[in-house]
Figure: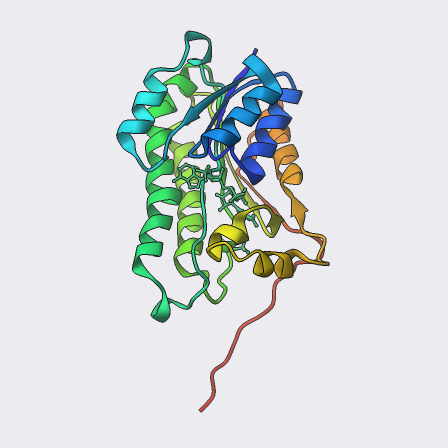
Length: 247
Ligand code: NDP
Ligand code: 8X3
């Protein structure tokens, strides 16, 4: 049986990806901070899900949790680097530096650290890494500042990982979703359910299951194929052009 580790499995894309992988016959190490949500996943899937609760920014907690994995979960065929967040929508000049730091610590530093920790196990299995980037890493928008910067990092890190892993058989992909209805906007706005409902309402956004199916598709391609990056949007979302300030 193949083994995946999914970060940020307590909600949204990570939870849907955990379910999709289990349904497809994988066993999954599911991580996140909310133990009750992880317990619900293990209740749902029994021994096929192994829950580990830690803040992904906490090096000691992460390493202790990974060191304590049961023997049958130690070989890693797939790492889904999904845990991440946006905080705030203010333009840079009004933004909260602490929020910027939290995004960098989570979306960049923690992603790099867990990848580094698991690379030997992934190489040993000729496994795969799927990183969850964002359209915000490719296209600027007002208030996207550091969030978009972290996701641009994710894409470039993934491409550079591919170069370093040349010849190992390890595959590395970035998925760059546009608008997906999850708890993302609730987190970004500090719990504003109305703002979240307004953003997604009537727009037929992508669902977490859409992205989970994409992760599963990438992970189950024939081993000679690598998706470098894949950008998805709901039909209702598109790009709008430049802005011009006038005197
Ligand atoms: P959710 O808020 O629904 O899920 C985020 C997940 O990340 C949760 O499971 C959360 O777990 C985990 N997480 C956040 N911070 C930490 C932390 N410090 N330690 C451990 N886990 C953490 O949002 P999404 O499912 O939408 O987000 C998943 C990924 O998708 C993110 O990287 C996001 O940037 C990206 N994305 C989302 C898009 C969208 O429109 N929704 C579009 C493009 C990309 P817990 O709180 O339990 O720790
Ligand atoms: C989330 C997509 O457009 O809200 O990464 O930044 S967006």
